[in-house]
Length: 455
Image (cartoon, rainbow, N blue to C red):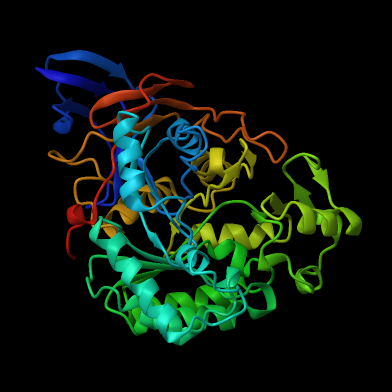
């Protein structure tokens, strides 16, 4: 007898590349039946008119800081928008050493979603006290590489860099750090060196890195790099480079504003002129400036007194966001980061937004193309062969949603509005979410690099 039978829905068949109608059976955490019949099951889920998708996989998010109360925040938002597996530690930042991160998940009895984690290069620069505009010395580089190897031995899925956050980081420094591993299963991801008018030069640097390493290379959140007038050229360069080097790819999120700490190098002198924007295009997200748009005085005060405050910058062009989301290459990712429970709505709305706004309403891409970008492709990228597809024997990570009603709810002034249209989410074959209610927020686990298969 099956544990769960999902009847009446459509599911993506990525092998034949079409949507199919069929019933999906789950037993012992795995997909055990696909067909037209209705075998006995302990529970039947009616998915008539719905889509039965592999659980969404977020290849670029920023896990919550477990040091603050040891409670899940972003991970719950992931689950509420249909994500079943997420990758943290991006942009060079790890909030915890990986051993501590794993121990915390174990102590909490599991996590709302399955986690993978990058080893963050910038974090180790900070631990060594390296100034953001300085290149690390040879001794410092060697020590950071040792620390990266430690994290990789703990099961990190690769190495991430936040080049823009530490502009002193040179190309040679990055390449030396990449030498911490030669495992082709693993990934290297990078937040670019600069955006806007310098986006293409930054993309070319990342293509050079990708060409010089045996690992896969992920250009992080392309939208916030080159959606200021450079997207067509950026996509042309990336698509051309990927044709020569399939290890290269990118992720992007579906919003025309980015978010990062107001005290970071991103907001150094000249940034607004480079974007062609004004102080009023910067929204702050914490007291004493919660939901306040900047003036010159507020901007300078926040950078000096509250450098860790998250800011949202409305500097990108919507038509270029659509171009990145719908490109033949690339994955959708949230870049979710919040602080004190507030921040950018991408943390709570990314995947429903793609399926509602860009698939249903604007028809910028087809349903199966979108599902590929949020399930099958990131699963392939991560070597997770039992995830990202509806195939017998694969994990019972499933998101059931209504294609006619799914939409994001979170806004830039209230990120806690939950998405619409998600019927239920299963993780490891068990119900984690029904409607907007989390039924079990401890079904996920840490996924080690040992589980990442080879191409």
